[in-house]
Image 1 (cartoon, helix red, strand yellow):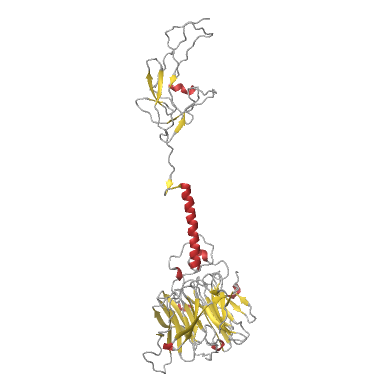
Image 2 (tube, rainbow, N blue to C red):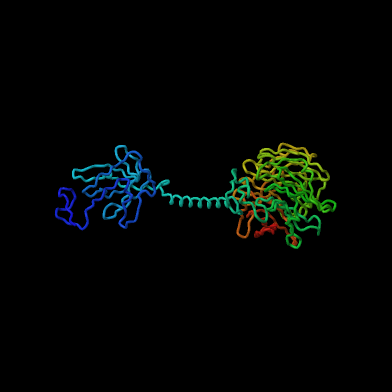
Length: 564
């Protein structure tokens, strides 16, 4: 069948053209029917997949016209998307033979033009040729957002740098701990000590440095000779604070081995952390007695006493006085027997600095002195006589470093006693007191009055140094080394003769800053004597340094402190 058509109809074939099928022009789609346009594969793709579409109820953006004789043309162009309101999406497959996909941004509708629900803004225009054209506003090229930078660096680089800084600071903290004499601990996010680190030790500086075995880090140490009763005890006994907190004793037996240090050798269970420990031991009428002094967890001074008669540690009379000690991580406290070497009433067992045996006989008419710090600048002195059960106040010492220890010496022939304290300038001063009331005193040698020896001071000691005297007087210096001084005791003419440095086979030893220490001199079977110094250099140890009295090489070792 032959079909003819009007030659003037726009877009129709030339006159005379024949078709097998009648020409049926396609009705243009409305804007709301654009979803029916498909990809070349005829697979249905909706432009509204991520934004459900609801057609306007009243205003119609485009009214369909009657069948046009011209094909519908849509001008697209290759525009790059521009993000608006943070969102862009791809339009359905393009309406050209290239199947190009173009993205358009979502924008708000404008009252002057139609709004395509999928974010396409459309304005209608009609050209003279009768073609209906949809113009799409060109969009500027999209500029990707700049990466956020921190301090001029990318986020990843900044995180890496901060991690390295943390590692460096951790290393510096460990180095500082070692410099402060802290050699034990496993680190952790623990609160740091806010005061002067020279006035604390071990766990007081950081809980991470509390001991997990052996001795308490910052343990008090007290030496007591045991030679006053033959064959009953060993050569000496050392009192210390176990890492679990209780005070125990360990003893060097006559065969050269150490015994004790376990729970069965516990003296007290109520000791303050890092408490100073002092002991006075003596024998009287074949009865051996031991008196141990320390600061309790409640901050009050405690006394535990024992004898070979009872073999039970029980509270002594000082405990009942409720004497409050200086509330500090390091506090000075020392007890002395009138006429003994830190715990051995038989002074003849201990040689003098010259190496000669002491000739002073044991005087039972005397008793004990005790000094303790009541605040940062004040010490209190109490005393008791043997056979009595009441301590009495004797003197208040003002203007001295309450963090440092106390030394005492009162066994020379005659009536003069000596005390050593650290002043507020970290200098050790030696004081003497002559109790001979049968002699008339004068301006340079008063009677019954504590007087400073002008030529026997030791400067630049560690602020929380422990002090001790037996044969040599020992103090810890600012460099954490322990120095021993040979002193000529002569009241106002007292002076320093020479000094020694505590060492091991490698040379002078830097022990923990602020370590407690105890010292003595012990005779040996060959007739000579050896110096002993006990201190801590790791935190869970009780180290001992020894040397022959007359000189020679120092040697060192560690007491076998049980872990349980």
